[in-house]
Amino acid sequence: MIVGILTAVGVVGAIGLLIGLFLGAAGLRFHVETDPKEEAVLRLLPGNNCGGCGFAGCSGLAAAIAKGEAPVNACPVGGEAVGEKIAAVMGVEAGESRRMTAFVACQGTCDKAGTSYDYTGIEDCQMLSFVPGGGPKSCSYGCLGYGSCVKACPFAAIHIVDGVALVDKQACKACGKCVAACPRKLIRLIPYDAKYAVACSSKDKGPVTMKACSAGCIGCSLCKRNCPADAVAVEENRAVIDPEKCTACGQCFSKCPKKVIVEH
Image (tube, rainbow, N blue to C red; front, side, top):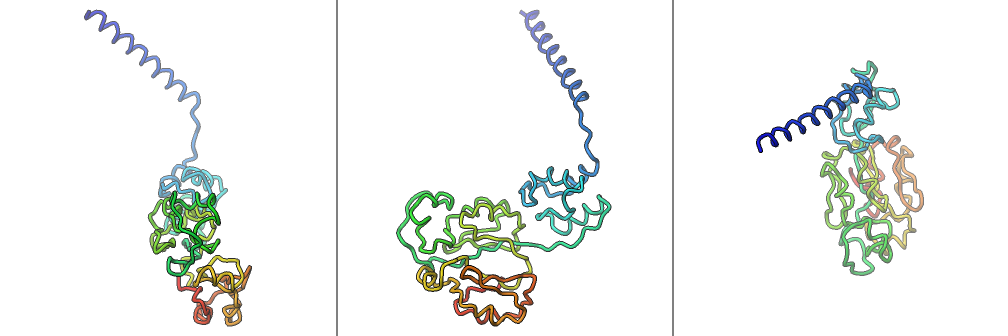
């Protein structure tokens, strides 16, 4: 019996040795040289693999930076600090980068937005495209409030407050996950230092908007007419602020009769 056990152990050991030798030889045969700069860049990246840079994870971005196919400050999570370190590795200038943050262009909270019916079902914004009207809220452009964006955010930077998604700009890394997850496309990335933003996504005309939500843009153009920097336009019945032109004078904010333009 002991001889049988020893024989089995020997056979298993021999098989393991052969497999090890085979794998070792295969590793040497198919070894791919990696760029030292790519490895150095990868070590500097935060490792969140959020995809906010537009590449398939941090390894994809590291490879692109090493090949000169992506800027050294392309990581939204690492920001300026990581960009400067990567620039030193690549021997280039980091260049200017502007911190961005997600912004929910809606303030149709439970007390402001009307509802067409009572909804009972799966609480997921993506699923509401299969129900009448795309959801119970009267505004077909507003936040549905069921948190698909919350589930998508890897940084716990967005929460549902009183039926509307709200971004914690301090915690937000501008990875864009919530932007992609929102079926209404009302979450967008804006400059972190933007003073004012338009918190409405409705494209309906004023009377229709007011009927659906008391906090909607009515397209009155008062903000546009009072902006001294020509930074405000009215497109598709809603105000739009150009952050590059905005001087943060506050005229649009103070003149908006519906308080749709908010301090960010």
